[in-house]
Image (cartoon, rainbow, N blue to C red):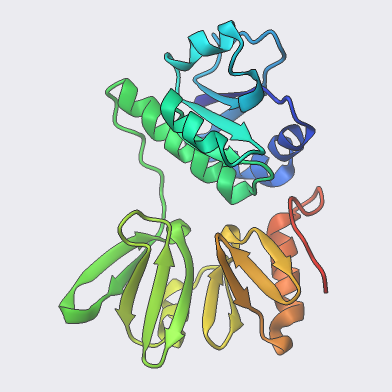
Length: 245
């Protein structure tokens, strides 16, 4: 179990970390436990820190950063360079989504095990075996797939894996929709099959997935809206979303 300590100097951080979607997601076979840390910070009981950029100048905080993996949170894009200089595991630009938080903590988790010379426990993560051009094959964890885009009889597969952000798979989108057979994936358009756990906003008939804005077909809008809020709102209401019709 990895203990995550968050210095929640901003109300948005506290509300996202306390939300039901985050609680359910963190409760994995190898779970994380999220602890709010009041100031002055005593981080001796946690393994990973989430720290607002505004308090990094305080001496007790700076002394802790070299000993633990940590994530910087800031509303200013310019602080990303500072995060890199200081050795942060990840930079979160506020306001951030739950998938953004997932990526930050997954990176911090990797560093946690790396710094201790340990092999991370293997969680059961389903993967899709992609058949690429020229007879190549590629296995991609389903959770890392962002969306699939139809291009005639082939399919472009977008993921968040470095070096594999976009690969071309043979066979059409309908084939891969059946091959995935995963409730996270929703056909939003004849051209797009989207991993709803990677969506950060639904806005004016479009889904936002990272920097991509994908159109939702009119006849699918109601279904997509329902599925979007089912993932974002299992009990406590939608988190960090926009809906403008």
